[in-house]
Image (tube, rainbow, N blue to C red):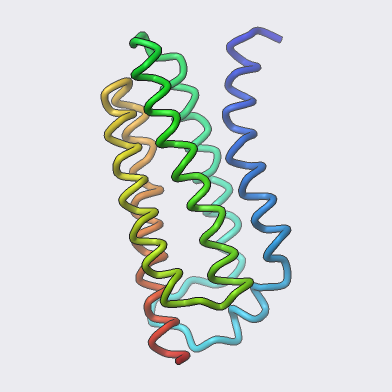
Length: 157
């Protein structure tokens, strides 16, 4: 296996592992989630793991493109630090929302996450435009998640 392929698989594996750990920690939460009053446009529960899996793969490809960019190491490292921070915020949101039921705190956490994703996307854009474009579905989904999160808070207080 080539070095580039190993790097790509590792880059994809990291967000998938973060998402998998998050799913494991919050297991059983979808039943409770489905029992909550849902805002209009709420997708069916089976769609969430599908969308998140696609987004985690896209994030992994994005981080690979950034890692392989012909740019100064300091610039690449800074972009990947932003990437790691937003991935950590993503992981913690699930615990705040599903495990702790802190819907309003989770909403504000999502706003911070969205801002971190935007900053990461801008960092990646300086390295590789395709990497930035691959982050756009993630930005859109987290904005939609914010709508759902706020709707759940309002409808279930």
